Length: 191
Image (tube, rainbow, N blue to C red; front, top):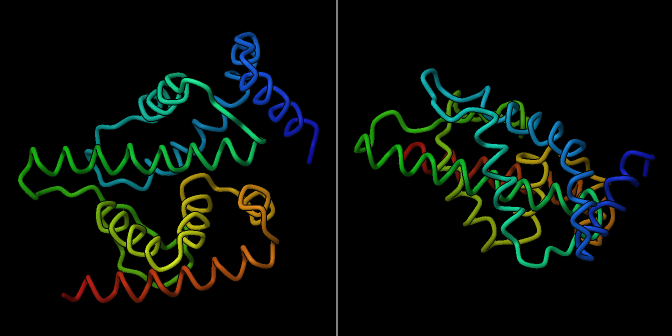
């Protein structure tokens, strides 16, 4: 773990211990990374998408700050939770927009870069969310691996720390999850 990672981990633990100054020191450090992640997801959205990078980051930040007693193990754990929050926010936004439009202009996300498997050019986020929910029923850990890789951009080593497993297991889960998601999404695209 590098020096910046150690600094983030220490600040997260201090924040977990109730030190409000730790949060003040932490925000500028994590803000840049959260912004990078949000931009990564939003740049793949369809034209005319109205949710902005800053709004997504601020929503994640507000959700973090509203937690009564956050318990952070380390940087990887924090960004794993951020990944789940971003997923929920993007899916909720997509559902609200879908309800407003009565089915038109569904929020789309391409999985080509993130999953490195042949999938349709555009995939709606609600479809991906449903697929991840089904994957969680099949194997919750594999779903967590996909969330952390896709939504937080965590490396296998970081995911292994969060899940308390080995990098080899994470890599194996990643391969199986990609294949499972491909079959699931392909089957629902043709249905």
